[in-house]
Image (cartoon, rainbow, N blue to C red; front, side, top):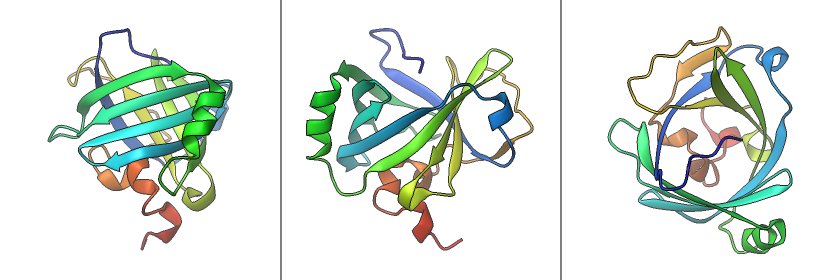
Length: 164
């Protein structure tokens, strides 16, 4: 999982539904479990265990386009994260994350489990909003800025409960 250099406290990210077979191109997946100490739209505070690592992340409210927002992240120990997960709001997110390299761009494809099973989203972090990138054949509709697809929203309204 790629992390931003220290001091770079913004995230520019595009989100897409996955509409095809991505796994033949994917690297080794990592199991993730995450919860939210705060899921307010103005700021989220997330605790995540990803494989043998754990992270505490604070995100600000997305800008109008939904592409950019403040992000601060700190690695913590897995025991610390486990203790914090016990304090989180109801609705723990579980998923497999697959890295998929497409011409030097790494898509992070999340295959959700539990109450969000059936949802598969690809995220692509960019250095700049104007960066051109190739869309692989398995990439579907763009959902950047659609708050229903934010993990912090999925704890309250899981994918299985959506009226599709």
